[in-house]
Length: 295
Image 1 (cartoon, rainbow, N blue to C red):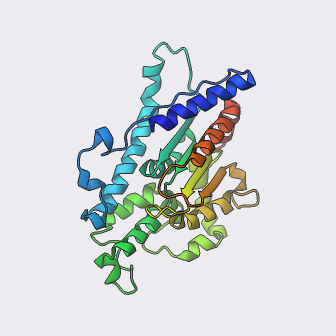
Image 2: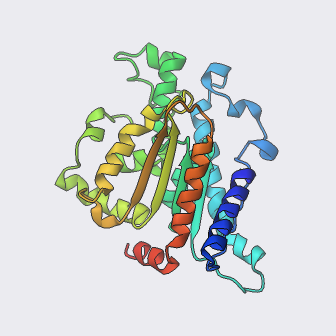
Image 3: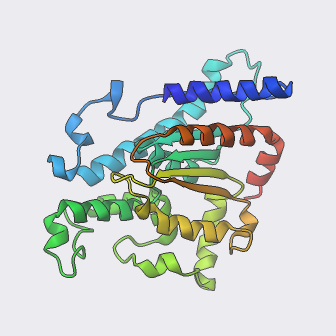
């Protein structure tokens, strides 16, 4: 994360120099995902079912949910360390994550009101869809031996009830679409009914109102296939579009798929990161706070 953090700061400073403006400073804090890099405790917990980790679903979700919590902890205490003399004020917070960090960035956007912008790179906002696809490809008994196939996956040892409760509380798609075990394609493809909107609108306001997100995926990514995120992203884009049922939320959601790109951060993605960050910082902080305060 350090290189993309440094290059983004450079892009922003260069933009200000060219425009002969110096209005907003950008600080980037990068750190290792839980149980990764310098924070690794158990390597097996980072492995998938195919590599022998029977607790893959709970290990993965717990790991990046913990990273989202770490991010919020940093937002709480970083100002007291960076500005002990109170000579500067942080006016807005953005989060950027790649792969597991991308999954975590989705949670940060939804669950921390201080974060108004998220850049998600090869991450997925729909854990149910992603794990269902992996369970199918891994040919788990809970998937292949149930009838119809997959009907006994949720609630099995591969995806325990305790994990279902956590996913329904913190995962973006599960939070908005509801019950994991009874999820079907119909929920993705239709607009919510009037009754459903009455329950959804307050959640959308508290999690997304006035926020900005850039989601980027690799079209050839087999580890986190775009097809797992696409139904929910389509649902969310329809809801937040100028003609959508949550158009008053002022949500900006860009979704870009890079053809031929695998599970990696491509040069094209880096350029989009720089563009999106600069466009966000060009907006007056007062305008951003005004939109998010209308919850």
